[in-house]
Image (cartoon, rainbow, N blue to C red):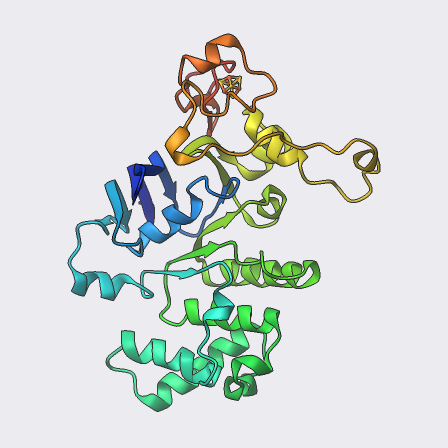
Length: 327
Ligand code: SF4
């Protein structure tokens, strides 16, 4: 059984213009021990999905569908059960979360506090010991437990946030743009750390980023979102090397390869912006920006269909296939 399964997930927010759809019918699963990368531009609904898994959405959010965490629907569980599954079943590392550390508390105490809140049998001493062990697990010296946040670099603070996410032994970690606020060298170190922890602990991970190239480093499978829907899904290497959907192709080509000097001469990118949720184009939502759109694309909305073994995509130009056949 998958550790996380989203079924026909639909989320909208209240606004002065009426309800704004952020997620428009998403089906997705993360298997145990697997890293699923969720990619897409800002505003496509990735972070809304992340927050929905632990029911962290603001009060004005309306949510339909199912969010099954280890088979239990998070959306219908009572508060006591929800508190029990947060951190112990699934935890989340938010974008820029390192800025959320309490500046007047030692980082070791902050990790220990999370342990004490979620494990009533833990003593202060055992929680402090576990906090030091977690700090070593994220490759910092245990003595850094006594540091205050301002004494740590950005990368060290992000390691502390990762240690905190692991504090209660979750089976699933949701990492929402965990490297975006860091410089390139530190990004690479944090990605290495996450990869190492994932294989050492057998964690399932939902890794969210706008940077498709990051996902080729860490993900087993990739799902690409556009305007609140999944438009392509499949094994990471195949999706990156041979994207089926024009949007995935555009996302991939926006990042230069090291040594690819042609990029300097003719930068590749995607014109225009993602649609505002109150003005989602008719037919295929991507059609105003799609370089290969046809007249039909403005009238017909493509469905996410199988386009090869373990691969699916939603584009009118792709021939759906029966599972097992080649597209
Ligand atoms: Fe482009 Fe049309 Fe395919 Fe949409 S359906 S991705 S607009 S070709």
